[in-house]
Image 1 (cartoon, one colour):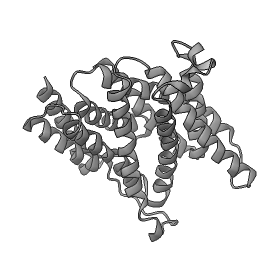
Image 2 (cartoon, one colour; image 1 turned 180 degrees about the horizontal axis):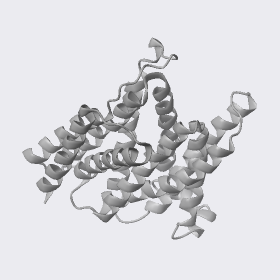
Image 3 (tube, one colour; image 1 turned 60 degrees about the vertical axis):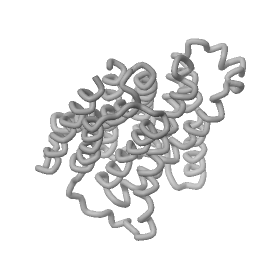
Length: 293
């Protein structure tokens, strides 16, 4: 339970950082790239066996291609989410991303055979309702909105679900007892390489310029992002309730903590629908945990 709590706190801090970026007009994609560079350095620092990496033996790990693929997918989905946010608003992108948890939950029951009962299913159902209600905001569509980008929320939904499901698979297949730090290092390295390539191309072509605030913010973001991912891996490996509990509780906990932080730090106002969503979130977490005891 401790790793799950730490994951929720770190994930909520990621949301807070993105709110800060929005408030101070920090270029988000640059911050995301520096975030992955920072996370890679952080991951290397916490490797239990650095020689395994420096000698190149890590490329022979059976999970190496999988980790590199997942890291590349992370940067793509992150970038598409930022575009969807600009085109459709924060609420639509947020809902599309968070509802991706439906995939690992279904896989937990159907593929991995995790136990379930009606109380847990009701709690998971409430989780989806809570995500939608707590994310709805009154926002005008961006002037950049075009119908040709109508597929973006769907891609974000499927991509986020794919990332969660692949993380779930990695835990079940490769990381149930060890290798989490090494896996995280390669994942963040792949994301850093992909993101840096895109950013360098944008700078060379004159589409963007370097912003010091993006680098500074990205460095802090990367440290938090590293621990957020590592803690969710450790929660999946150590929490006996299974991934059908870990993903909904982690997602809803992040929503609740980030929302409360937004109220306290950014004086955000909640609508009645948002408050109802938080009530559903609390009820869902209680039901899911109680059903798993």
